[in-house]
Image (cartoon, rainbow, N blue to C red; front, side, top):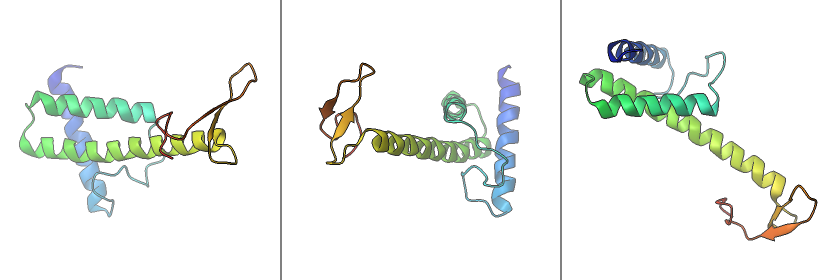
Amino acid sequence: MNAPEQMARDEQTAAGRRAGQEAGGEAGELSAAAPEEPTFEEALARLEHIVEALERGDAPLHEALALFEEGVGVARLCSRRLDEAETKIRMLLEAEDGTLVVRPAAGGEDTMPPGSLGIRG
């Protein structure tokens, strides 16, 4: 897809988001009425595309603002998905005393202090 086609697609997406906001949606958030939210990987790829489009700097101000709004919503979705994954990992790895337990495939057991996996204690 060439740059003009991509910019047209970006504008259509942004216009759709604005229409959803006017219908009562929250600014920048993916619509709850949407049949299915994108996967984390899809959302991250879209966020990367938005950043690239904004970094090019060739979009008119109104399009750049719409892309920025969409990017904020997509970033929030990614953050929420990461928080959910962190919570699930913590539930799977946390011992009763609060320490994180690493369970190697071989069956042995090592303990690690909270935060050593980048998970806040």
